[in-house]
Image 1 (cartoon, rainbow, N blue to C red):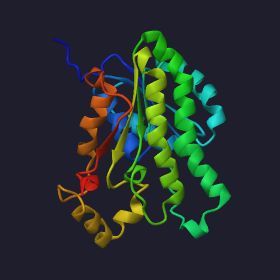
Image 2 (image 1 turned 45 degrees about the vertical axis):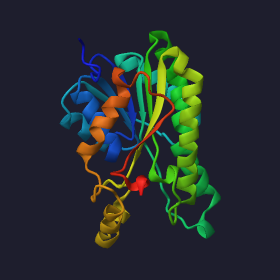
Image 3 (image 1 turned 30 degrees about the vertical axis):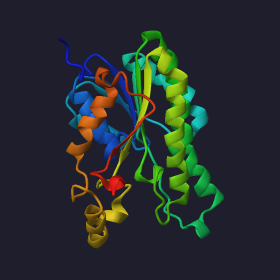
Image 4 (image 1 turned 180 degrees about the horizontal axis):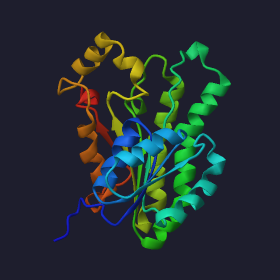
Length: 250
């Protein structure tokens, strides 16, 4: 019997692959046998990721903050390893502006990258998945998909939207063999959460709010990500999987 958790032979596209959780997932997919195209803005960081990762990888530096460019980005991606059948939307922006300080530009930039781009990139890649009758879309949600945090009104709005767009993607495309789910990480040390982990007392307080009693590590994310990207999750769609040590259970 074949391994239902295997991603060997699949083509994956991962946004935000240059750092943080996107890099963790892109690396895990490549080392598990998928051909992985990493997308992000910083070419040097992407090149470093590709050079350090075992497996078949490629990268493209592009402006993911422009949802209108996603059809063009998708066309370029298809020319590398063929049409991707796994899409992981991990790129994200958190301006951390208090509600009274939110600007129109900051609000729009947050929603463009965190919410609009994941949908329009998925929309552009779905025809290739539909042709294979198999696809996996994994969006990155957040604790702020279901919780309100100080300084997080724009980010929280985008993450609440990701929860709903994931369900809507599942409703639209699951009958074509394409599942759509979201990973909602708790507190993991990344560039995006740097301000949290730069404050040891705050990081410890967050750890204390989990059921497990600690914050996340890279290894904690790999299993859930590979599950949602593989055949093992074939009857799971429209769901948000909280990988948060039980933070949202308390």
